[in-house]
Amino acid sequence: MEKTLVIFKPSAIERGLVGNILTRFQQKGLVITGMKMMQLNEAILREHYSHLVEKSFFPLLLKSMMASPVIVLCLAGKDAINVVRLMTGATNGREALPGTIRGDFASSNQENIIHASSSPEDAEAEIARFFAPGEIFDWTPANTPFIYSSLELN
Image (cartoon, rainbow, N blue to C red):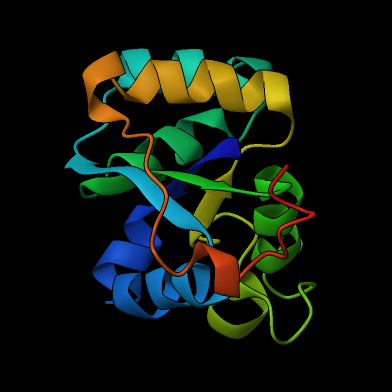
């Protein structure tokens, strides 16, 4: 099964949306293989958002992401990266379609509730950035045959 990283940003934590969002992922059939709460600091954010460090909005991004603890998740499933990205919706909450996480819960480009890995390479690097090897669990829930056909599991 493919793995992906998700961060419940301070906007999700402060607004009490964690349960609602987590339920959506679980109802979709994604498996939580790692989960923890942590306080992000500037060093890890500069690494995580290295492609944005030179942007004029980066100081605002730092402030936003350090406003409260976050919850980081490693989710697994068939095509998990694409599935989570589709569920997340457009970056700008005002442009995200209804039914997506951002479309239902966000009205901002900056305070957009959630981060999701964008590619297999990013997912691998991001999972390693936020989780130690012993913090990710490889397990198959008993309900897996009711989520995927046996042909999809091979």
